[in-house]
Image 1 (spheres, rainbow, N blue to C red):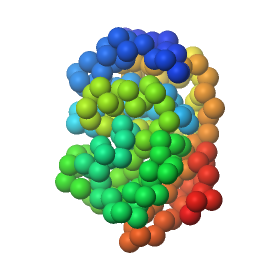
Image 2 (image 1 turned 45 degrees about the vertical axis):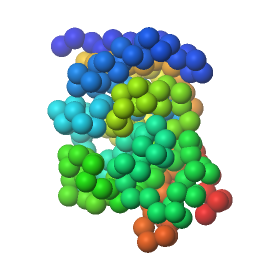
Image 3 (image 1 turned 90 degrees about the vertical axis):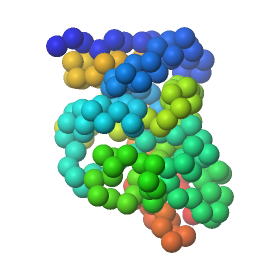
Image 4 (image 1 turned 120 degrees about the horizontal axis):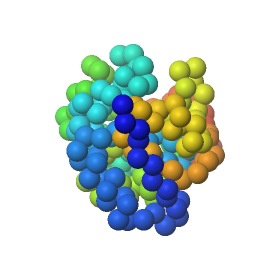
Length: 205
């Protein structure tokens, strides 16, 4: 099996021509590894069902595992999830940032991401690379942290290449990154629940 193509990227000023090639690959159903403001993530176009299935297989997800995806901004997120005024007012204060927000999905979310659930996780990371990819693609990108089967997060692209280079099509190398998981919050009936504490502070709740 062929190995993934590796692209070196500048975290602050990503090469737009190089990112356009990545977007072309996403449009063709490729699976990539890309940097966010927390960890490296496995990603694909959420409309590419076979690519989604590949990531599910790589991660070994069960049907109980909730899925999440990266949006460019709250405007795009609102196309896929139900956002009331209260949620919107909070999210516009903390995003872009290191949070995964679990919200009620609407019919625009592909069923392959829901596994009979009614909720989906959204991310709007403080990452020029991730958000430029989504903006250029015009659709969200699946977001699932790159980790070993025992749950150890991988933050070094060289190690990611050794372990997953034969299972993905592209690795966007931004060097070793911080390696702290996002804070996961769930919102329902105007109530917030902390599912996992991570990089994002929760003192605003």
